[in-house]
Image (cartoon, rainbow, N blue to C red; front, side, top):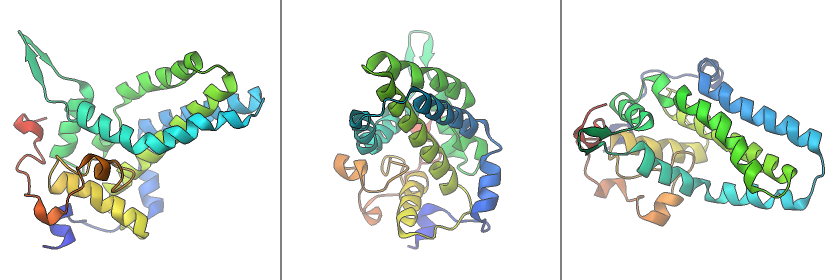
Length: 223
């Protein structure tokens, strides 16, 4: 079985410039960029640079693959549940099911703008409350914003017709597309391959995993 058989085929080839032109047409990258620019400007204005500003950002970068994995499993792949007459479901889970149903639908690749509104508010507020110094908090906000930008760009690019060139991106590309086109229960990180999945047992040899009948219909419940 070829790679394209298990990770889907490209319909045409696009370059990075064309891909980027489409990327910036969507609200999520701009909203994420507002966090980055705001945090960067505020951090420069505040000054008071210290080495202790770096420990939290470095720790966040180290655990980011695990954060991706946990969000993917417990938030995006949330199975709707009925409690009495109420169905517990979320916008993120519904949008993600729709994304699995049609991985080529570009707007569905991005974090929904409704969720982004909350992130734009919460992302700066929590660190400002939790960290002892303003400079430390702003460095952490900046790191989270940059991580979000990397996530959005990587996830988007994987779902375009861009052909991977570097060995690293080829691995990431194949890893995530296996999740969509082979089996939705494995390969759950997006910006890395073989990190948190290897640690948590969700990075098997694709040849040993059956093709899932619900990869495009999560939980068999539809979008």
